[in-house]
Image 1 (cartoon, rainbow, N blue to C red):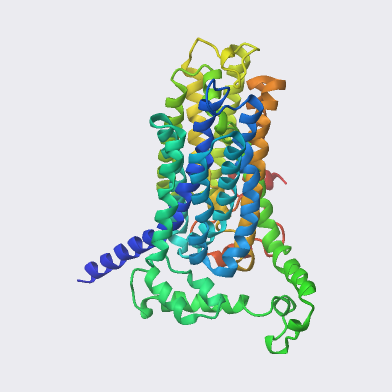
Image 2: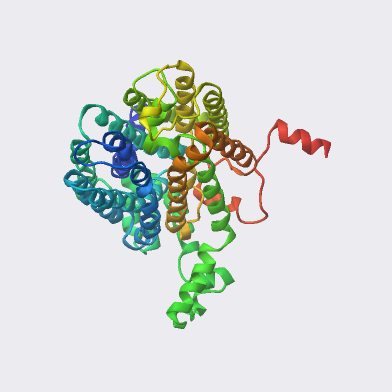
Length: 509
């Protein structure tokens, strides 16, 4: 009987957690489709003879434009989430993508096409904080890593779905199909499947609602079963509530008269305390550098023009089939990470994945240097080699696997303190899109000056630097509470390398 009750509780616990995170998961599904949309549009419109047509330069801009506008949405995202709450934000962030997909379907000229893609970027940026804040705050440390990885799985599903749609329907039909995803996410919020997070409700002084939300998230259980966890959340909430200035100065809240300060002056004082403290800036620098190395390590910069790059490399398969396989491999990699993350941890996965991308890009660069003609240019199909080879295809798929093993977005959801979490996640995501824009936009320049050899060599260099950086500065957050993670960055700057290799040097020293 006891076993039956325990099994039922655990089952309810898992089911509720999956249901509650489904709306954010659908946001990531939609996000994956949005960031992959240019990949199926460019091959059809690049120098097309009839209808809409994109020149080389226009194609380069179209492939990177959404990444340029994403930071605007990401910066807006954090304050909006803090103001309206995680639940309402999950509903509101779908609206830009609904408009964008409609515009894409009806796009009648290049400017309208660009407007639609820019709006996709803004909508994608706005989605970041609700996704990352919500999933991390509803999860216990023991399952948070796996649940955040499940969330990333939906990103891979979205990418695969878009590549698959590109192989069976036109890009306009794909756009109209995509509208169903944000509508479903909004419906889940409306029917009450997505409660606000307990910690946010406590920050608003809604203790009864917070307890009710926690009971729901832990499997329709009773208050007695979550009493210990709830009390810890209450203590944590009380530590961060009230006047930020008093908290910083360790003053009693009863003596606070900071509300009388000029609003503009108080805003900057609180911004300095919350956003410019080491507990925020140190993890922010970690995530920004992680995103820089991850984005510039190979697969992301070439995604908008991936179909043509595969053809230019002479890979032994139809380029659109390769794109679909990239989606499949990314999906499988995300599933594998869910099973591996608890046993291996995020640190080993992140470092190994970065090293794998470095090796893959090095191999592709060497192949391009030794086997491709100097005239090969991915934006000019007339220069593509006629001979095909399995060698570049194998390393390209290896690059895809390693890219799928990255944990940068999971780290982003965990490392910030509550006071700055939503805004800092927005800034971190914004930086990711800035780097992604730079990476995708400069592919054509790297190819023009250094051919595909130089492009992949550049990506390999970033990946090697990223491997070294992560080895020293990436913490292990698997199984660690959000409150404990905050203490990582409160004190002296830490180096997290702690294995036989680094210890060998320590002993010699």
